[in-house]
Image (cartoon, rainbow, N blue to C red; front, side):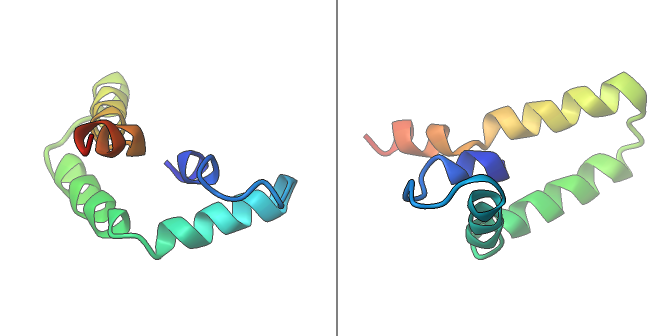
Amino acid sequence: MVFEYSAFLPDKSNGSELVESAVSYYLKSPMVATVEKVAKEICCQGYHGEELGKKVLEFILDNHLSNDLTEKK
């Protein structure tokens, strides 16, 4: 999710600066609270191994930025 934020940043940074900017932007976004809430819910449901991985990937795919952009059009 953090790397997705980097795609929307000005192209003035490169390498680690770009990642640091993306992390900073992400940490200031409302997505942090959502990720924390869902991560706790997923962990409490007792998923393990491949099933846990699928749930995490499902959450990421359902909540990535491009979903927000296409829904607002």
